Image 1 (cartoon, helix red, strand yellow):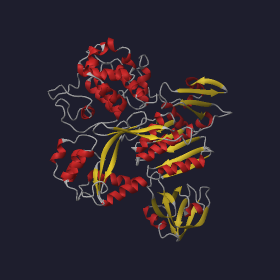
Image 2: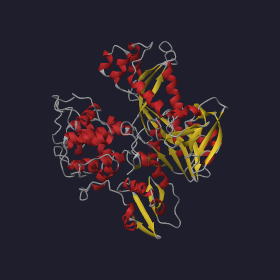
Image 3: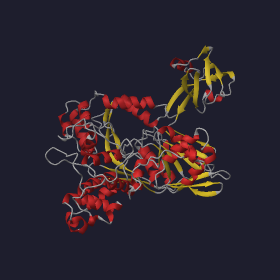
Image 4: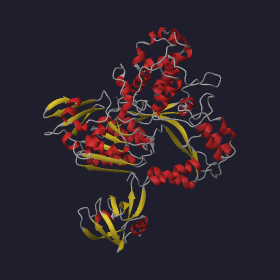
Length: 624
């Protein structure tokens, strides 16, 4: 199901980025609409544009673009994903041994004929499909109600003939099922009917489900209200979403019902999980309703509206303008913009499903096991099952992804043991550590290695971090840019930041986001040593970007109150807001020690990493 629409999505994205649109909408009208609706101030280059294509190129936002009537329909189809297909009702792949069945659709002819996943179709109507190629696809298509005869090599090695009826099937964007006592909701996008699908799935399987798995891999988003409703079914009453517009106006979306289930949920994500999917995953993490497994998500924390004939009948007919109007924030005020959702268990995409399978085990009654307490829920790993065959590699990935302060205990021969003692009994499961090799003596080793575990912090080729080294201005930009997962190819911002330098993309990105500025003469001094007050200023800006509650707090600060604060008065006026934000939002390095900090002293790499980790935790971007 996850791959059925991937090519269509990719084509639409390419279209949106590359098309020079032909439309009845004038450049002047487009600029007026953007001035009124767009989330940020428009760049000066927008006003120099001569064509509609140049307007959107100058804006530089891949999510804001003009759509012809045809593209409006394509966009709606992608979001809703309520498509129909006519054929045998199977997902297939072409192999040298024949056409392999990958998935089967309920109500399809292939499933009703008795085919199962893994079967090989080796001939259709007497025509060989060995080796298989794309040309075999046309043999399965045809009018609904017609039949084909297939020769199948089944998974048990037997070869049989089957008659399959071609049928027209509706493919929904959300599908629910149950596997043993695990309720599964596979959601490809959040459309107008998704809420109904979640309700149906939970109602059908809640009584038999011990826990839930919600698969949002390759879910590109969709309707935010649908994601709020789906999230509320697992979390219950409360605020689920905050929107902020260009004028600072903030609105919130509430869920006003009790949860439909109180059982924990495992959310599966990958790099293509975006927008509304990130809202759901981030909300599950924020409200301790379960855990998130996978790599970091896409990082789309902005929401678009469709401007069309309904609002502007004089400007549009069946065409439309898709425009970024809001930044959105999860239930706890944390953004997903750029940074995405940092999963509870950070593993490569290819291990996501297998790691989730290990964590869905029941409490073993007769075998050794691990108990992992994650986001206030207990999950079990059956060591006998997980340490056998291919599972052992999956188990190593899971254990490598555990942050240093995760609570993990084992039971071996009915004896409770810490994880290191379990490794002594099961040496083959011990993973390669993601921790740095030179930070064990640092007072901030836990914070430093937490960032390493989540792929936020990187060392040298020998996996050294050099914790006591001082931090340069360029290195701070790299650290923050890596945390946010951003870089920029836009050069020429600072005269002393060459485009081919290792730090150019990081410095440029931080400048464009407004986190850093130069020295006032067009230079940045990338190799200059970072001072404490410079560091506090930049980290305060990062905190404000990551959580709108921190930003609201900063906007309420008054200069005279900051100047009268004994701990802040020693800092330059431009550094006081950042210092106040950090102390208020829980950075433990500064909360109780700010008065003793020398504003002009240098910052060590371990101090910077610890501050980064503490800030991400306090602002709910990291679970650990």
